[in-house]
Amino acid sequence: MSTIHLSKSAFTRGLQCHKSLYLKKHHPELEDPVSEAQQAVFSGGTRVGLLAQQLFPGGIDLGDFIPDNFQKAFSETELLLSKDEVVIYEAGFKTDNLLCFIDILTKKDGRYQAYEVKGSSSVKDIYLWDTAFQYHVMTSAGIVPEDIFVIYLNTSYVKQGELDVQQLFTIESVKDRILPLIPQVKEQVRLMNAMLANVTPPAIDIGPHCSTPYGCNFTGHCWKHLPEDSLFSYKGLKSKTQWSLYQQGVYKVEDIPETQPLNRQEQLVVYTQKNQTTHINREAIRIFLSNLNYPLYFLDFETLFMVSIPIYDNSSPFQQIPFQYSLHIKNEPHAEVVHKQFLAQADPYVDPREAFIRQLIDELGTTGDILVYNATFEKGRLKEIQRQMPQFATAIDSILRRVVDLMKPFQSRQYYTPEMKGSFSIKKVLPALVPGLSYEGMDIADGGAASQAFMSLFGETDAQTITKTRNDLLKYCGLDTWAMVEIVRKLNTI
Ligand code: SF4
Image (cartoon, rainbow, N blue to C red; front, side):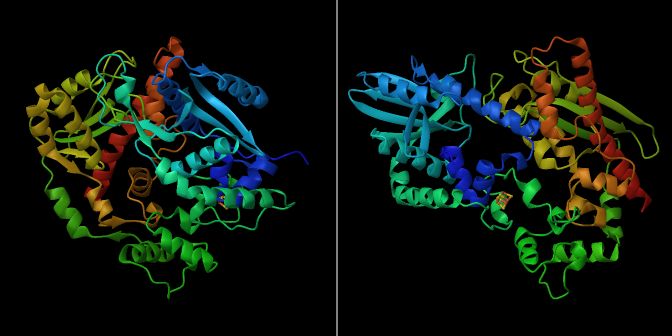
């Protein structure tokens, strides 16, 4: 059998679950397909890595030799390290069956410093383990760094003009935290090698480890014994309850024994599912509706999502920049609904926020409640614009005072149906209350996809693609607010 190599990613996979590592090495065909969202995360990570290299300019990049010519990367690294002073990107080392590629390695006056780059806003525990693995491999190969660092994104940085990479990143030494992990790294490597030499995968059942610290990409294989409607699809059940039931052999809500301890929310989820009943607190709903002040504005934002490198001036890593809204307006209870919307031109050089907020302030008028679904989100974005564009502060203040959260009656279970599966997200509430109206089958069906679609238009020149993508965006955001109109109409009927 050929040697099975362990790299940083294989090691962290194995730390999470030995079976996952075994399947990756012996049965990669069982892996789940990579989603567009995951692909976008990988591409974002590559861009962060390239930008971080600018912190140490003039380096020699050996990344081109990965993954097809590891040997060349190792020999080039050795050659380059014979110089007195050098910066190497993706410096490669090998010892036994272990491989590592250090994102940035510097040598000066005979001393080495190693840097691992993460597209994250902090040093997570798992990063300490993968950095400890890198340290172990390179020191075993004979290069002992004086210090080892994690480079990650500084969320306090506010872009102004050209990206300032010195401010964009935080460099933090982790040597003191990883050295105590090295004996465990060695022991884990030994266990993983022994496990990989077996002819069958380890007998590991599914568990909370399937999603921590990363979502495993063998769930399609390992979770297939569960029914589609398993208790794991019920958000209203706590993870602890789900796993305790699973270990008792209970896979469906209908089979949960009467003796199972449940909190009040879980009891509601289980009772309504078993009895196929709807729970409605009519008095609470009546009070909620009677407190609404017309005209009613049904509002929803779309924003850039999980964008690690700020695109526009006056914004920070991971800041969610609004680029679109949909607004349905009902002037009085029986009036026709009027629709307004805003969708910025997708251009990385034109900040969408000013046009967005100007049109929004104009269209929201000065009276009437503004209904949003999950007010924390819309209020958060408005407050950010308020801080960054003080000329709109007063107008935004008065908008904030008028915001009413339509999620509240569902979050507090004043209206609950079995179809909601314990969730109060609009994606579940809408089809439960208004059958026939749902997000199923839409080309853009969630906020992450909307963000990616908007950014995919940066630099796009094909008119057909632009028109289709913009129409998909308008359709998706429009459904979010139309859903709210329909939900209020339905609440009024009860
Ligand atoms: S799905 Fe769970 S049990 Fe299966 S390989 Fe992944 S982490 Fe392990």
